[in-house]
Figure 1 (cartoon, rainbow, N blue to C red):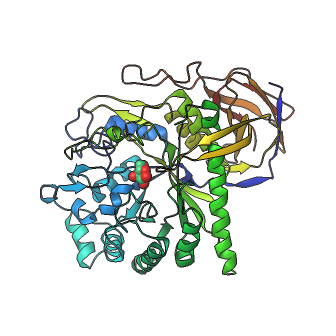
Figure 2 (figure 1 turned 90 degrees about the vertical axis):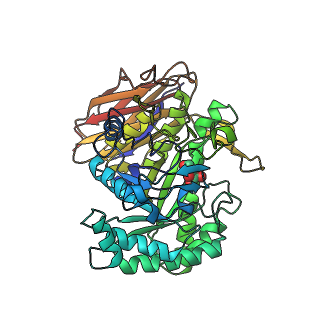
Figure 3 (figure 1 turned 30 degrees about the horizontal axis):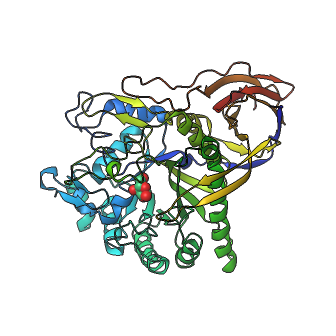
Length: 516
Ligand code: AHR
């Protein structure tokens, strides 16, 4: 391929990445909690049952905020079931994942785990089977210091100090018929507004996300956001959106293009939120919480990989094994997130362990990194700072992306997908300029020349690339390092031009320093 030229300037930034952009998600789903982060009796478990091997990988992955306890699960969850003496906690049917929930792990254990991991907790309240009353009680239990029945109950349970949880989700995917007690936008808007009023009366410092659409392909997308925000606009800080990229069609080029539709989704939600603001003559700008995103399709539509018979505890469901190709599509989504740093101020990789996750474990056995682990870890580590605007002239290709919803098969045309997808982050403190680059050409090297104006004395500090001739290669328990990043040779800087050759079908990170 001919050389692709890109231009950026130190003074032209999209925005600064919020630490919460690098979040993830722990749901009571399959083996995410049980056998994932928590497995009493495992040789690596600490005295609280937290797996230390998983914790070490979580620290390496670098999530900053963790959403809990769902997901679909939260729409039937009684938070009271998960607190207090473990032996008196009820076993319940979880209708979301057709499992039995033992409640051995609950809110207090989650908060302890977050503190141990150095991660901010993000809690979701149940606005499916429950409503404002349970939500306000949950905030009081978690965040009120003392002197009331619920705050003193927390203290009696062994947590003297309030948890101080700042970020709360107002339910989950309430637009989806798969949700327990799905709502219309009008119903949800009203319930969420009344819930948030009470939650903030208890703790005015909390921030809240209203449910947006659970996918861009939802028939109600757009009207849902508008109606919900007409109710909640004055009360919330965030509107959520969820995206799962797929390769149902078995078309790699289309799959690698799919994160461009995630860009469109983000832009569209911003437009709707700002239209609601304009309608109210409001200068308030809502931020976006992309609090579920990932690649997910193999274990999505197939019932055998989604639910198992007889209401098992912690079943092996949604255990998607990620390929090299998935890591590339996922890396494209990372670039989408960075390039929307001005409005996406929170995001959660769904999920953390075992269920559609970057980390896999065996019950009683080892833990290992899936292919998607690497782009996330690199983004979290090196993506902190000012995201710069880039003008690039990349050759393009034409494709169409298949994104079915229910019985409706939907194709989305993508007439001109640039082979190069690129983000650039300037970290003033580290004096670094880091490029995150996806080469979507499946067979050709992409020679890249980035002119970095306003930066003097840059020198290549670190390069990493994820690239493999076998796009279907995976990491497994027996071969956990089959896919891992390697150094990208040949990157150089001369007179503020960063030059690098991106291998075909690769995701790369090029970090230059001296950019004070
Ligand atoms: O992350 C898996 C599931 O995907 C979540 O429970 C739900 O919110 C979404 O549909």
